[in-house]
Length: 153
Image (tube, rainbow, N blue to C red; front, side, top):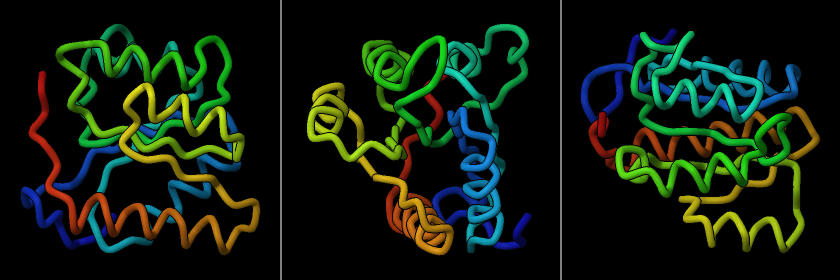
């Protein structure tokens, strides 16, 4: 954990990472851990768990309200498109920033994500160094430049 705190609030940023690929989740966590902003990363590996975390359902009843969600599209049980649709249709969650972070470069996935009100769409590079750079850029933009809303619930 880094010593610096978010310019937004003086506390670490809570990030929900919804990613079913353990290697991608680990690399994303490592890239965020090496960043400039203190953060706490909470990882779930499917959409059902992501929604349970966001709604603080068991076993996540003590989960913090995340400041941002990093969402993979292709997950088991409930994919990222369904998670995004639920988040943006829920009055308590719809203001939560959602960054789609996925390997898909398909135009239909990009369009659908924005139709579902994703805050941005980022294609994960397959190269390790590039992935670290992309995650670092996400961190810099969302945690150092942008003002995040207060937790809605």
